[in-house]
Length: 503
View 1: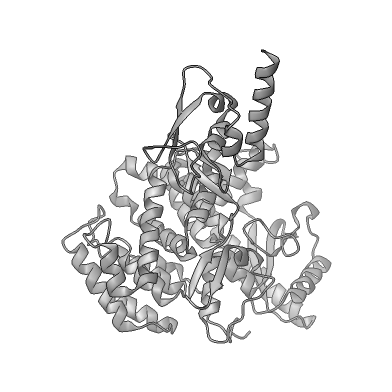
View 2: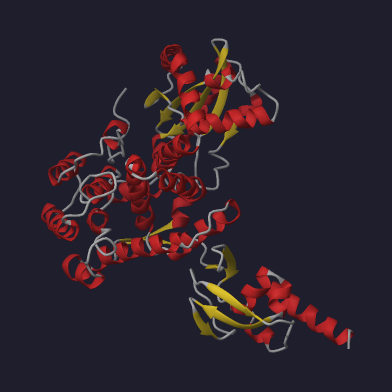
């Protein structure tokens, strides 16, 4: 079959390249830019490298490698994702303020406002994540806080490249630091990667975190899979051959059919879920371990359904395992047809999707930006319904602005929890959102450590601490003028009625 995409530059991340993260050089980065045929000014890249190298000279990471290797890896990941020149320069420079002695003014003067804004955004994200409390309940709101606070989606993509290199080099950290990082992967970076559609990063990060937090389960599962690996590969090859023959006989075009690597963590989660549901015994997980996965890529959506029809006509399929994520995409924009057939005394999961869907499912907004960058590339409108909400393309500034959650803000409690409020909300709304009693006892507020007015509008990322009176002093009627949210006003009015009723 012909190459999947001729008119646009496809993102192809070679896992062997990703894991070859030691001793990178400027020449490696320049070679990657040339290989990807990106329209990037090489002299600017060299200038950024020399700037970063001066800032990091003499610095070592805990893994023992020269610090400059880290921004080089992050920049190389950005190149493999086919992002733009601004992203590559920002990736090289992303640690020069916090880990070096550079200033934002210097970066703006030397490399321009767009690069400076992304570097500043990366610094802000790092500071925000440090305040985040590690528990599952507030993860979703923290993701929303990041998305609402970050002005440019490239900040989040570069941040995840940064975290991936940290994960790959984690052996150099003390055990307690490894555990803390792995916990943040499961509570923060993995869910964030999934939320914005970066499936590749989610799998890589979570497998490393799985190995750190559950070493025995990781080793046991890896051994069990290794025993079955040869047989599984033979079944995958046989199914691919049969699928190709079947589609060619029916004159149904396809771009590519290939076996799919499942992450160890996702297999383990599936096994644990089936055990809890009583569908398999913990000692006999063969039904899941022996399942194979195959992906069929097509050029358009009608062909996806044609492929599905042929497969269902040829093999018995499990109705309860069939999902149409083309008609009903996942919340993060993931789209494909997924079906499970009975095959060779086992089961096989088959995904059917267009090449553009595949690119988005793996690399999310990065794939959207790459196609926008490619000459003549036109994004598939249907495939990018989610990313179009997430990213707004601004031709004049050549930026990628985040445009979700415009009607909300997300603030932080002293314990590190994230609270969602309506835009324009005040400390009064915050207090009543936490608890009615806290609202009634509210006599003052500190915002980011400073005393402020109860009527002051809050902003994304504000650290809000209510100064509580010993006894309830409210609600007061003038609080109705300061409150933004209807629920806050309802609680205040209810409290006022109760005070009148009680004399």
